[in-house]
Amino acid sequence: MIIREKRIVLPAILALLLLLAAAAIPLPASAEAEPAAVEAATVDELLKAIAPNTVITLTGRSYNLTEARGYGVYGSKYYGWNEIYDDGWELEIDDVDNLTIRAEKPGVEIVTVPRYACVMKFDNCRALTLEGFTCGHTDGAGFCTGAVINLTGCRDVSVTGCDLYGCGTYGLEIDRSRGVHALNTTIRDCSYGALWANAGADILLDNCTVYGIEGYSGIFSYSGCRDCAVINTLVRSCASSSLMEANASRSITLAGCEVSGNTFNGMFLCSVNPVTVDGCAFKNNTCAYGWYDEQWRTSERVVDPDGKAYEDAALEALTLTKDVKWSAPAEAAPVEAPAPSEDGMIHVRTVDELLASIGPDTSVYLENGVYNLSEAAGYGTDAGEYYDWMPCYDGPGLVIRNVQNLKIVGASPIMASIVAEPRYADVLSFENCGGIRLEGFTAGHSAGVSECAGGVLNFMGTDGVTIENCSLYGCGVLGVSAANCSNMDIRFTEIHHCSYGAFSFDGCRSVNIERCNIHDIPGNFYQIYDCRKVTVDGKEMA
Image (cartoon, rainbow, N blue to C red; front, side, top):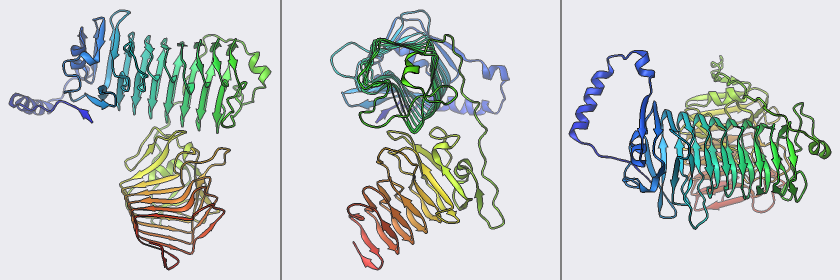
């Protein structure tokens, strides 16, 4: 539950009418671009000033969010309070563009008391600047499960000259965000790690200092991310499972960093793709399992800038390169859906064209090839009108929502396939859809060494599904899973090598399965819970 202010009075209504009338009069471009400059000496003044196109200068010394007069009671259009587990509230700033919060002088601190709250949480903000202040949870008993700064669905964020400290779980917790740069910032004494990023892109730590982390994951953890780097950074006196953990991520770089006096299980733990290491110095570290934390799963070997895997001795012999430069690749222009062909179908050749074509009353034809969802230009960060990405442990999964009458068709299962890399994600999920037809293609997880926890096709609250002449394969746990769906018709489809079963239906009705080829699946093929009229080759199962 998030609490916001909802007071409407007559003067406010009159003011709104005047604003609407004034909106017809264009302002000069310079007036529109000039940000408002506000000084805030107290926590109440800070909260009151939160608004788009605003520079807030912190002129006081300490800003304890739990001491705000409206703490947990009311907010504004741009911030509110999330109720959290340990009888407290979490500040959430939403939908604010071009906001700067900076300290006038060193020593300024923003703090909160509840351990389950992030100190500052930003959701769907753009062009955000945080500069020159200290931020963390107050001293006290209890173990934190909230981060210091959380960024969800944000873009173009600068964290400069800040001091982020535990007991917060992570100094920076980044979810589905792009263009997050932390510069000249200290992250210390956190209980999980310094940085955690999910489904992000262009995330940079440059000239930072990290110390005193005693965590359970990588000091830097990436899941389903791309084009991220830690450069020119000192990591010292930490104890954690690894220095860097990268799951189903690509183009992750560690360069120009000094890593000294730390204790890890292994320095790196990378799945699917390797991490690039260049110009780093590793000194006086203790690693229980060597360079790679492989007690739970196999790690990809880290590589040099040319993509060649390092030998252990070569990693040990690396020397520090100072003032490394790095920048993410330029963001590509959005891919547009191709125009329908004479057959009335949209013929796609890339995964980006496939995503751009998702919409109601649409037939999509998969030209021959492999459509790897994890290779989409906007993988994990960019959403369309009818799809977005579900965060999962090792990377985001595609969810198609609120679409009526969508058909995805290939020539045959041996000619076209849709794959996903994250093992915890379903390959394709449909939510609140209707009239979905999937035909003539293969779907599954890409080849890999770890077991899956996600399925292949998943449907939620969807009416009217046809799956015909497809091949659904493991390591997905289930070939087809559905909850609260109706009128499903699954025919002439191969389902194989899934680890839990072929089908799972929960709260569904009118499901018909006909002449499917199910093989190499352990245990019960059919898992049926609280369903009506489920038939397999004419035999009623429920």
